[in-house]
Length: 461
Image 1: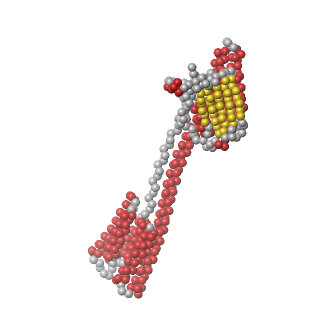
Image 2: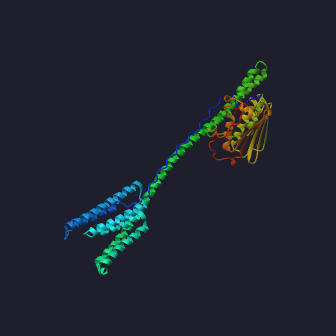
Image 3: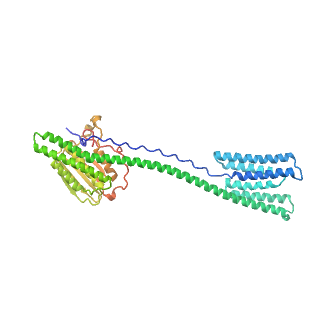
């Protein structure tokens, strides 16, 4: 008949639920890069040309045909409507290159219509908008080419329609003034484009910073949840491995004292003394835990702690426990030595309470790259897999001992194994690397990421 390996006999502690994954903040949409000229420039120029043309028609020496004036006003109205439609398309879906070319062609055509109907002669200034708007839609090179084309068109007009234009001061002045205005217009477009680009980059930076801020807040909340879960798991392990171990020992010794009270008074007294020792030890470890939480830990010696644990086992009855240590503790951090000590406690508790062992041997070996603790008993061992599968589901609830040891060892880079066969005893082995080889920032272990080793009744500690 086999017995349970690893159930500590203390009430089970509920495993803390893993924190839920926080919702990732949605990425904000990037603003569209500006590709449109400031609307007030063309509107102001259209208004100036309209006022000059109508005023000249009204007060000029030569009366103009009403149809020509109507065509002049209608062409300028079409320019206003074209600019408004372009701005609506730009706000709604951006300006594509094909649309920009179509608008440019339509605008040049309307400029020509306005010029043909203008009696004041100011409408030629409209053509400076060609390189100006092209700078925003097509870039600097296209703007310069179109500006040179507009100046060449004016020059060609003089060549074809005015004989001796090169000797006419007014014609030369018009050409120079038009070239100067084109230069200033392209320069203004470059400045405006640079300002829009800077604003676009600033808006993009602000949006990226806002998105980063939301991500950082989500990550901070996630870190807080993970820290809380990790601390909850750590406290559960400490309670089980320290106070839980001693409460189990107290329960065993009190039951033994009651059983031997009338049969062997001396043995009963030894059991009560062992129970009192376990109670004092539990109180001492509780105080040590409080000091550790207050960042006031005391130096820990694994060899001394194991020696006291073995001596207490010998004084309290139960299996005969032996200990041998090879090597030095130097180079191992307290958390690594504490993990090995908790493994020794768990192995001794299971051997004393469940395995019906006569002898238990503890072996600690400190190597150049890691330390190994082995707890070997000659008890009833582990069941075969078929027997473990035949255990009823109600009796196969995982315990906390081995689960907690794995969670304690995994962040340190350590490992835990339990081997045994029916009637051949059980061997528990825990290993940890040296302090320099262990991870500096252990992640939160997931208590569900690896199955527990089954005990003889399907339960593990």
